[in-house]
Length: 148
Image (cartoon, rainbow, N blue to C red; front, side):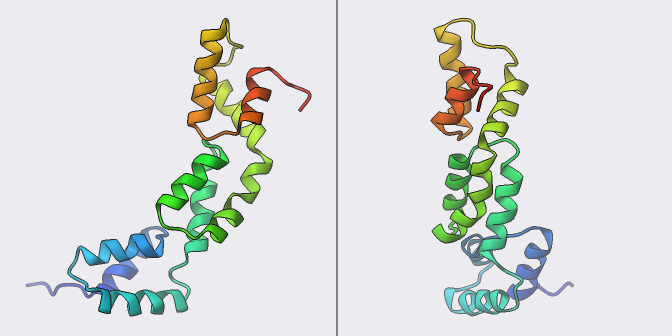
């Protein structure tokens, strides 16, 4: 008969697979019977040992999502995971600088040709907006603004 892993062992195993936010890890540990009086100090300990970091999670997730999405979508995803506003701002700072190039790349992969009519233009704009790109970047891409 195997012994049931401790909450600490579960937490370390989860963190070994990928970065987690504090809120995300607390929710996962709570499903395994951990109470708030056990989970809080454990998360504090893991944070103190630098095994758990919301800022590191935000950086990794922003980098991963940055290939396909705009800053607004990345910010929304991080906020939904419970990352603090300061960590979000630091994580997406670099994505704003490259947003136009990433919007062009996403548009090129999906469409590759300028819109034929107003309906097609609206569809292409909705696609890029759904990906979280700014209206300025969308206008530059759809309008064919090569001067930007």
